[in-house]
Amino acid sequence: MKFNIANPATGAQKLVDLDDEKRFRIFYDKKIAQEVPGDSLGDEWKGYVFRITGGNDKQGFPMKQGVLLPYRVKLLLSEGQSCYRIRRAGERRRKSVRGCIVGPDIAVLSLVIVKQGESDVAGLTDTVLPKRLGPKRATKIRKFFNLSKEDDVRKYVVRREVKSAKKEDAKPYTKAPKIQRLVTPLRLQRRRHLRSLKRRRLEHQKEQKSEYDALMAKRIAEKKAKVAAIKASHHKTA
Image (tube, rainbow, N blue to C red; front, side, top):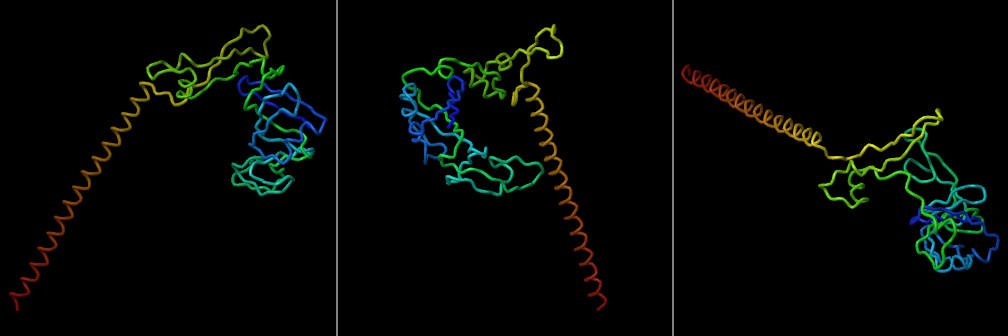
């Protein structure tokens, strides 16, 4: 069985291939999201604790969270569900998925290090891979760099260097994402303008309603006066 082990602290991943079933038997009958100690995998993994995040069986079918079975089943899947990507709006399809319980038919098991052990593992805990892309949303940039509301977020955007693939001698340039939910003076001005438009619209509606009520009251009074005049003329003739 192959183990794809990821370390969120460093951003590194490592694929470990084990043939001895006694070493990885501890993962059998465990479900996705369960934590498993990694002491039985070998001496280098002593003290490590892993969390199961997924896997594939020998035919390549992915494990699906929530399917509490140790074998493959066919499910009717729709938009928003894992193990399925819609091709048309509203489409549903019956697809084969593997249950979330680990068994001997699993070929690759994905693990995440929850707790690091005593010794370092080469290529997994000793190397730190830099983040290729930084946060994009303004609040997340503030959280990432521990900024206050007074600091200018635009100065802290993570830029990456890009070199043209078409021209070999081209000078490298930097790219940065467009900051989302950035509150600028122009944005505040636009918000004030929209609020003033809404306020004016409400005032105009109130004026129209008061004019309409006054006109209706006038017409009702005229109608009552007309009916009273007709009744009075009938009484005089009688």
